[in-house]
Image (cartoon, rainbow over all chains, first blue to last red; front, side, top):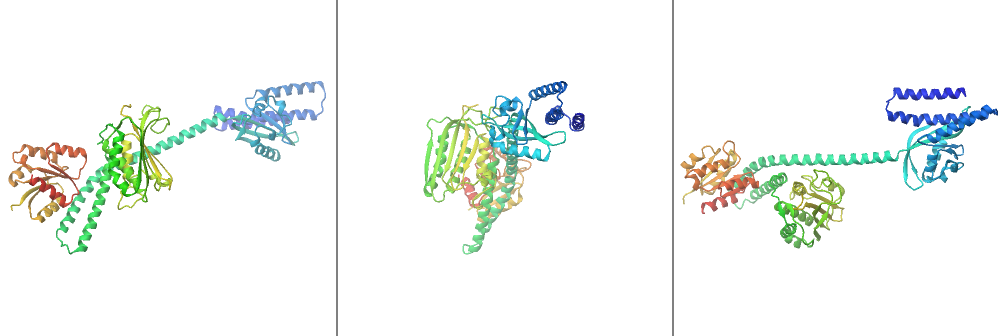
Length: 455
Length: 124
């Protein structure tokens, strides 16, 4: 008995060392008490009881002492704000507190006695628990403060923080194991929420950095474009001058000059697209009829659609509300998207242009009820969709689709600024643009615009 | 037939030279180039151009300011002005048309298009 008391004191001393020399907080003090002290205390009492019985002291005093000790132990086990259980060498339950019995789907601890984990509500985890228990008893080594799952009687999965210790008698023979755990499901849920919030924040931050980069490119582009256009003008007129000095028979020279001129036109095209990309100050926002904008833009690609054998399907809701937009810019966006769709269907196909009114019911980067968000939840908005049955876009390309100078097409024909200009214009309108596509399954661009009567 | 007089104002000397070469190559024009709008009024009075090609973004007196000066000048006010600039924002064009320019051409420009525009205003 004396040795048990000394043992307890030693363990307590060690724990106090951990408290005073380790990082001390109220939380870790409670954790240390729950994790180390309670199981040790219970284990000590179990051993003490065993020792008492072993002594075969049948005297009244001893019996009284045992009764008092049992009562105290029972009170401790029932009062502890944690689940406590103990098992024999066969991994059958010898006892537990009421909190634990309830987790197991039993009404009282007595219902559990003699049963094993395979007969509990947590059959899914039973084998795992049993392996742990066996290892603890075989190795005589506690397993402290680890997190695991537990299936509850209602089928819900709970998270628990468990500690298990081997139960040993005075001569260090293991006769069972003792376990405790606390339910940390709520903490886990909060951690998950926190993690989600962290990822959302990270995503928002990366969008912001990207947007800032794009804006910086736009600002730089405007300055660079002007500086490039001047020398381009000189080179082009220089070529024109040489064209005037050579005869029609000097074909090689004429061809060389033509190639040079084509290259200048290509540079100029890039510069113009860059200027388009950077032009936010020129928006002329007015209340516009989206159906008219779609029709006027389709009119400009109608001929191309026929040549390429592309069938057009217009699904436009009647009596569409007006949107706030710069007519020219939105036409530019639509023509760009139509042209991309046409390019994506070299062997013909179908082009769907849809427009309808919707209620924004999904929260996102710019849709929420925060004060600064342009779109509010439940707000009505106009959606325009451009969908094709073309070659589609794979995941990797989709990520870079709106980046300036990114193109999958022939660089002599394309500047790689088309979709970045589209994005820039939609951003200027503080609208939304989204692409859905799979390689080989076509692509769908969805744009959302604010109603002209909106806030 | 007498050559038509074209005045070009641009701070880019190479541009002035190449436009002059191209116009003179046709044999139809007499060209005067100015690298600043500072003396535009006095040169207009002396050279008496039939048309002025004017840059917008120049150090010192800007193109728009030069137009306003020409509008106040009895000789200058009768001369058609075509802007020849690298700026092609709507707002720049609007500002230029407001001060009475007859055309706005954006660099780089092909000789053919330049001459077509000059001819259009010379025969107007």
